[in-house]
Length: 344
Image 1 (tube, rainbow, N blue to C red):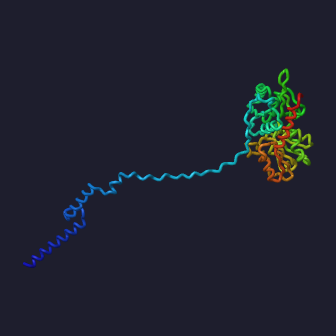
Image 2 (image 1 turned 180 degrees about the vertical axis):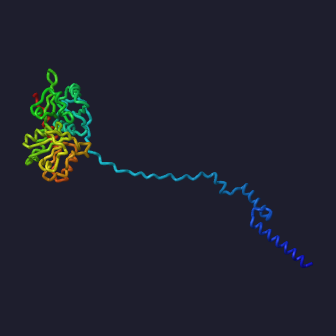
Image 3 (image 1 turned 45 degrees about the vertical axis):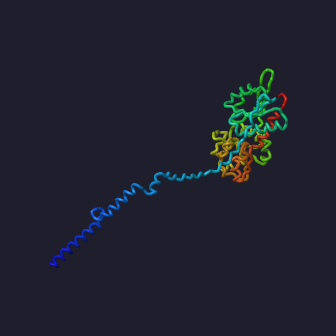
């Protein structure tokens, strides 16, 4: 009886071991370890009533602000200012004995107003010089009517030839040139008389005359009013000359005709176009600069800027170059001598 009893105990023991192992492998089964489960339930309930301090204040805390993004601004260097003429404030026209001015379009490039008014102040002359930008040459009549003390004006592009029909007469030089850059306004008992002159050729001769000595042939770039004055001056100096233009014909060469042999034959080149005048300072006449040498002389009638791209490119190939600042001064002196003369 002992042996069977031991066998039964052994089987019961095996069954218990098997059951314990099964529960260890399946923790979700609550049938085993009831004390532990009860303890866990009590702890869970306890946690629900009294949440941890960290959890209690977690919701009350303001959310941390994200750091504001830092933007880095790249500051580009400011471009160098273009050479610019600062206009003088316009003065009451009737406060002066005499008014003078400049007509044309555009006029922002011109320094004539500053130069003349400086001269008037230094010489204690009760006169003033203004820029009169006209949309049309027809407006010149209204200008003369508006200012009864207007005694004279200069003419620039594009009106040096267009002004002629509005004048009462021309002096002999202006008539021969076919262009006018200076007008004298004569106030007569019978009305107003406009007389046309040309001082561009005088300014050109006095400014460039010495440099032109020893040269015999010149190319004149452009066919406008100032180019006609330059031709007149070159003819006076005995220098053979030829016009060059985009619109060529039997008497006018085209830019495409400026071959190496032509460039070698004509050692003087005069720019009478507005190419390169402020503010379009990055432009220049379309000539083959590669054919230039130290034998060439480049003259530019443009006064602003002091050095045009045309002049700069010429110097890069060894040519001598000079701008129109002195020419402007010389023609202005000649214009004042005309305006300041009593009668005609």
